[in-house]
Image 1 (cartoon, protein in one colour):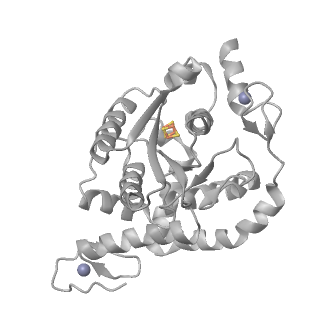
Image 2 (cartoon, protein in one colour):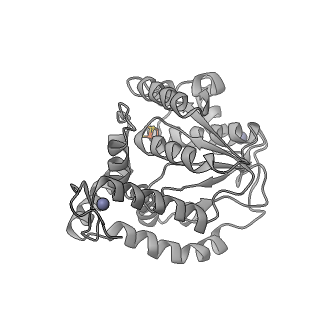
Length: 305
Ligand code: SF4
Ligand SMILES: [Zn+2]
Ligand SMILES: [Zn+2]
């Protein structure tokens, strides 16, 4: 894509070296997201889409984009779900930003907290469990999002994951030899036939984090965008730094990882993820491949402490 307004001030340089003005950058960004939705059939003609909103820049950009795209789709309903994990110094700010954004976009927001739904905030859980914060947080967040989205009759849950997030997940799973988790990545996941598991879609999949940041900044999608205090300790943080370093030295590294991965994903799914692999948790009846889901196992450990 070439910037036709050469006279206008360029605001963004693409990986290819093209310089774009604000209008052309917005067009580039929105087209890329729309193309991803169309090509991967992320949104059907008559669906209820729940956006997993954190109040951070990725999910705020996603909600803004989807609100604009679905405005023209008469039979598509959009709403947002925010999970309040109970992280001091972080979640109260992002929750306020999420509420403001939903009000502006006239999108209904549902908020559920760890404390109310599970009995403990994440801060409290981490004092009792000897596990990585993101493992505990991610397990319960996924658990609640799926449960609540299903109760709210959503057909899909949209996540603001961008190309950087996905490239990090791919590399992390590779380093840890975790093919089961790798098979669950991709632009859309979940099994068509399983009504208990709400399929997850990632419309920003092919957009780089720096592009999402620029789009948020250029379009006044503002907020405090504070970082979670537990983020630095995560293994993901180390992989992120490594990939950013590589991308600087060798532009195109992240999209290269995605293309190579997407080519092998059908084989991974074939081998590691089959319809029927998922059963019910004997305690909570949520979908799981084990006898008892990870959320129930962690809750059990919490009660014993
Ligand atoms: S960085 Fe980790 S602990 Fe913080 S919100 Fe994300 S997953 Fe949860
Ligand atoms: Zn232009
Ligand atoms: Zn369970």
